[in-house]
Image (cartoon, rainbow, N blue to C red; front, side, top):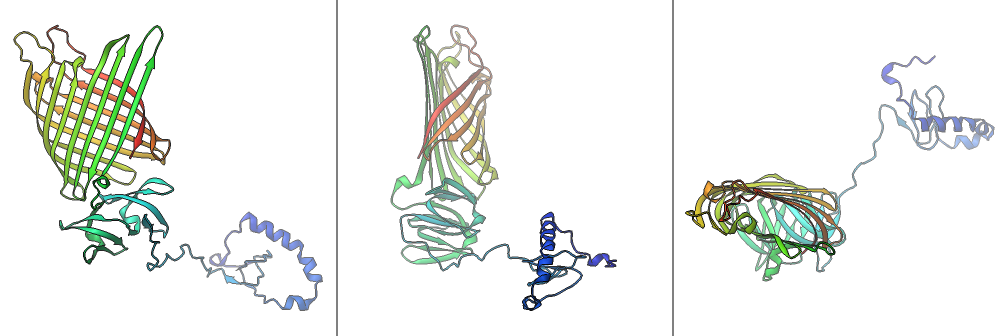
Amino acid sequence: MNNQPSSCRPPRLTPLLLLAGLLLSALRGFAAAAPTSALATSPVAESNFVLTTNMVVVTNYVVTTNLVFNANRVAAAPTNAALPALSWVPPEDNYDWIQLKSGEWLKGRLKAVQERVLEFNSEELDDLTFDWKDIRQLRAHRILDVLFTNGEKLSGLVNVTPDKITVVGAQSQVFSREQIQSLTPGGSKEWDYWSGKVSLGLNLRAGNTRQVDYNASIDLQRRTPETRFSINYLGNLSSVNGDENANNHRVNSEFDYWLSRRFYLLVPSVEYYKDPFQNLADRVTVGGGLGYDLIDRPTLEWNITTGPAYQYAWFDSSEPGDPTEKGTAALAFSSRFKWDIAHRTKLTLEYRGQYTSREVGETTHHGVGTLSFELTKRFDLDVSFIWDRISDPKVGADKIQPQPDDFRLVVGLGVDF
């Protein structure tokens, strides 16, 4: 009988070991017939429980082996291989290189490091985003603009290691990596500061009904280490049997100045909008305010802005005695939510609102939800749901009250650059 103390009992063997034990036990008789001199050449150790690597025989929890480990002292295999030495340098080519904290190197083109997120266009994996803390090294082959947390700005070739950054310009300067606030492509090429996307949608119908729907959206952005300038256009034209039933255009422009890694100043923001079917010939809103990043992750972003504004509206027509144009103060607010649902699927939710006086429509709302499916490196399939609302549309000379809400579902082909 085995009177082992409970603390010395071996762990439960897996079914695979039990099966191996049964098979090897069957071979034991064959081994017993072999010359003892052959067996004597292999060292044998016995204990209450001994774990083996190449031959397992189960007999009252006694295991015979050529390589012996005591049950109370099992050697663990290393889980992480050593990282490559920092002395290894990527080849001199026309690519930027980044090394992940796992030791893997990627080559491609650095787009930006802002808000503790690195955006990178890999040569093989397309657009990628990483937490800055997950980047071990960065080696840039072209000029980068560097903004430090103390407000100092430098331009040059940049090498980043786990603990420092080296900027090679007229002379080489070394700083602590913790001092980096942002990195953006720089130098003499203005094009390096810009990125954007153009999306077009077209729907044609002929026969008993002739219908044409045209939709377009343009998003442009210029980034430097301390600023971000964006301009967006969204337009919709539609006609049925030659009669126009939709014609609206919206342009938003915003200039952001970073105060810290999450706070930024809007100086200014401008919106232009026209929709004759809402009795709006033209409407211009100019304002400013503060923005804040609520969530700042590689695959999830959410920021909000708010601030005072001034709005001026021109109406297509008005009731007798009412003005055809009106200016008033406003409170503007906006939100942008961006989520990379999967490797090639992205969801973007944008909202802009303005609270104004009753004379120009009271509260206005504009919302866009876009689901983008990446088809190739440059082309996306975009499905957008658009909502526009003027709480109290201005009544025109025909004394007809326009509907407050407009909804559109748009499918378009987008091009990234």
